[in-house]
Length: 201
Length: 201
Picture 1 (cartoon, rainbow over the protein chains, first blue to last red):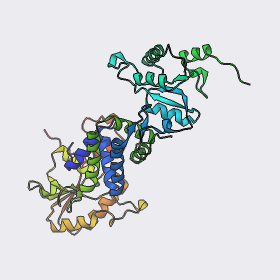
Picture 2: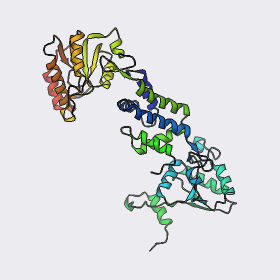
Picture 3: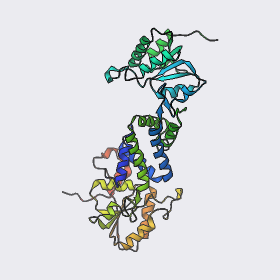
Picture 4: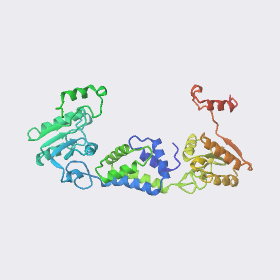
């Protein structure tokens, strides 16, 4: 492509590094930005830079934080005896959106995957074990995605916790609320039957 | 959505203002940027700002420029007697990519559209007429998209040029190279027959 200016070429190249954005889309965004007020583009540019430079990670759970601790860990109203283990920050956001969980979190930053060279040491697992030992955690809830790697990770962590007086649970797998039996996969359906719960009247 | 940090919320809001990018995609981009080196994010942020602050428009043709004149107008090797009229900068880029046009351009910045309140004065038309009168232009080529508004615009400009000794042409409409007759629309096909050219052996 023959760019009319070096500045446009640079902007296109930088934007096209983002996932899911090719050079055509990047060019469309460039022309969009050229039509905006300078003030608007300044805001976008500053927001991106602030994001990368000012965001820190919670020293306790690994969640996104602006201080030493994240909003959840710093809150006095959260139950520190219940610890929910998740893979990533988006999982925390999803659970927080339900507003029904009042415990705290621990973010692994992934799952054990020997194929990709990710072992327990690459994840936040040693810190997790340490936390459970020292913070008086009474229940650990696994809220991991359904994958073989996640199962391995949960198994590994469970074994490490064997000696500790802590209850270990995992989120329920089953038919989503509003889901139709007809369209659900066999594995989920069979699991929802095996793990049936008492009918609440 | 419950954002874990004000900085993330701000970045999501700014990114989601871009066309075709919603809040979900914006959040995905935010997490991507958080994983990048600070240096990379700085480059992106600076490229966007530079783009908006440093890019100017050619005083002669309206193309993108870094100096007073754009690369095309400033080039001594371009034929200033042939003037190609286009709607926007992307059209210039498309024609420049062919590397077969050696004249100069004039960018209208749109087409006449009474419905959207765009008249000749909102476009770059008065400057165009002035240019043709003063710069010894011998041929004007319309390279507009095929739309009723573009036809109106070409008609308006042609009428303004009636008294001037200038040849007026328009790009050929027809079957694209590699296109199949079977799949082309009737209008294009009938026009390509009406405007047939001598067979070159």
